[in-house]
Image (cartoon, rainbow over all chains, first blue to last red; front, side):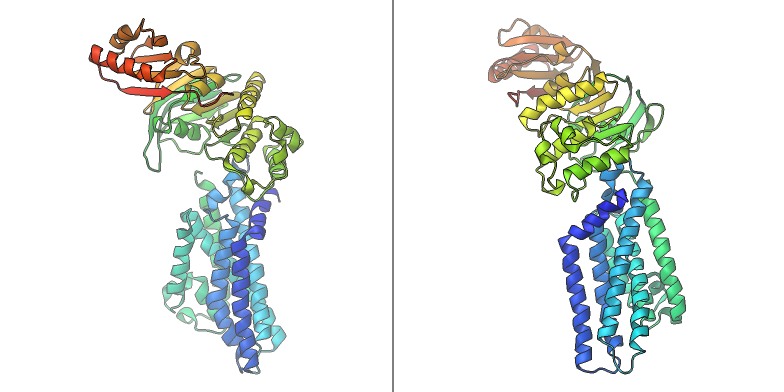
Length: 227
Length: 291
């Protein structure tokens, strides 16, 4: 718990994180309210398209940056490691805090967006909101671990920024490269195009696998890094 | 006990600095000053002792094991690394917990350097001088058996300078090993029992004869550290010159002190011409503090 205080306080006190949260939430909810006002038949689908393609990646990008104190994954816990905290434990704590915070925020925002934008052609509102809550939470956690790979590779913001760009370029396609990005699987889960004709269930499993693999790889790399 | 054996280091960032191969051992219950600039590699060596730089060759052992932070080791780098979101008192409490030490009142620990009013401040809002003082407080009041401090008297309130020296001395008397890196002979002689001089990554001299190699220069005086292949000819020229209070030489090294820096520089230049020698190193020091 002592180690979790550092990324938690960073998240709570980061102005950029709060700005990103209000901006991305405002965008997703404004889109949802627009669909509702125009009584769109598939309002939730349209609003969630914006949520998945813009709000989730940008929001998680900002949350991860805040949890790391805008530094690399290994260096973000250096002040505690110098006091005797084990590097692996410090890295895992930061990874888990970033994933949990991102999952929570993206899940709640997804559920709120689905509920606000609900149209007559969408699935029942409660079921739709709960499914979006789960998919959004999983996608948020997967995105966080994905960006943490960049932060474990390069200490500056370029590591995370490069992976954001890769997600945008590869994840927007339906080729084989899209299978490695959270974007393609979240889109598939929310009713969009599937990468390589995968089923939503397969995307759900892939998203969970990506979250675990990316988190493990980045934490292990950060634990071995010299400060 | 710190054992450094055949150690070879190379910095990963520019400007490239190389250290070694170098071997030495440092006994517990004593303080050591690594004297030199960053270009001489003393900061890189201190990082290696802290376990933050991987040796390209050789080894560093602290108490028979590899270096690592925690209960055994406290390291304060040039730019202290502190968690910016914590309050100072919360940070000191967390530090005690992570080091496995019994908790102590943060205000009492901060009072060691006279900075108790910082206890309730956020670390992110501290000035660089205040942050250094907090980092030094944490190290000096911890129970770590090895203290590694980079330039511990730089960027401090002048009133804190004497307190750092006293606190360090108390830790050493209690059995700790203290290693400081500094470019100042004044600071080195104030803090170290043994002085290890580094020149471009090589251990040039190890001495405990501080009076000879870091003689006091007085509040308005100056000190020159000279290295030359023709040092003995220079010594002959400089000895007896009334410009200098002290002239001391050994091998290729000379150290001279005097009261008038301009006259000293002129006398050294004249002696260099007279002796027809080239200087490999000329380091000039003047006191910065009147503490």
